[in-house]
Length: 209
Image (tube, rainbow, N blue to C red; front, side, top):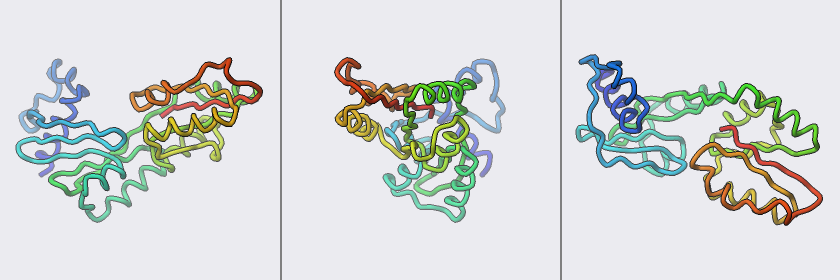
């Protein structure tokens, strides 16, 4: 079962390009873990990915993805997720044929100079927020490490929710600057208005996750 699970997982990662370079270098060519074709691949915005491999339906995603896809939760799944989240890791669940089978912890480490940037901005009187689609526990751990106040952490937000948060501040008369590093930040980045349209107060949304 372990070999089969590892093979399925590796096949998905290969499909999204994570292990493709390793394969080109001959890494992972062990016959115990053969890579297989992933079919019907779908990337779900803010929830995860899913596909079919050898007739098995595979889903990898967060808590929201589990609910949206009606995944049956195996005993210990939520406990494992909470354990990882308290460590500042993003917990994603691997489900096979509609049932959770494993939990993986991902670490998206903040840049080495992130805390310095936050400190400088704060010193300039700029209020720095973290606006992220990640869970509350993980977001607060990362925010603490880079110097962002827990009261300025807005977590579990879908791309559309990020747009709403920024628009709300802009409508209150704030100048808003956003730093985004992923496709989920694109809608919010597009809604940014010109700085000259606003006056007096300055706020900044900064996304490190």
